[in-house]
Image (spheres, rainbow, N blue to C red):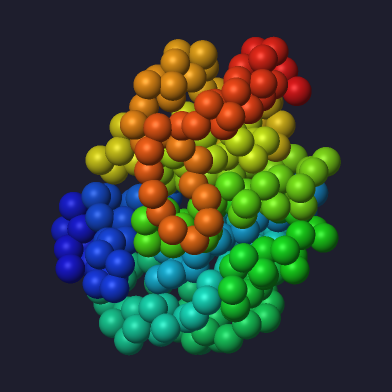
Length: 270
């Protein structure tokens, strides 16, 4: 199907969601990386480690490889299956993001393991993401591009327990996580897990997205007390829990927990 810019994109009929529907795969994935917080992480000295969580059709990975080309970097793409990427590779003329790599390299990317792309080591990690992210936690990432389906489609990858585990695994590391969503429930979940949470740049038809970090100075526009007031009034601000997706007003215990978060209890200081 066509995206807003006239280019081709993909609709997942099983979950009723379309990949990068507004700007198209190339423009949207490139724009996502243009945020100043992300640019700062990608400009760090030494080897930068990036996780692409949700390889999908390879759009985010292609944009990252463009940005990382020529420098020391490690890119890890997490996915349960490469079936979507394999399908896209059958129609390369319709998907311009594939031009970033040769067809040979894309074909090699259908299998797990590392390949070298212009000095960047790119690994594919196949399996249950709730487990494989833990397997890789010994070397925490600097940046995570979290490009999964919505919480409604994959609640197990958005729940409080999932993100509390990430916070524990990344303790002491400086990790920035970028999301497409601006969901109040997702933001309250991340705050409840202990992350500092802020407003990300608008993308396509979305006025804003979400950024989360393990340290306050990774976020340029943190959610402020006015957002906390809106959370208290929201009918969909309850943190996501378990393997089912249900929204509702935030329970008092969760609200009190977020109020005690350093982002609100002491401004934005760690």
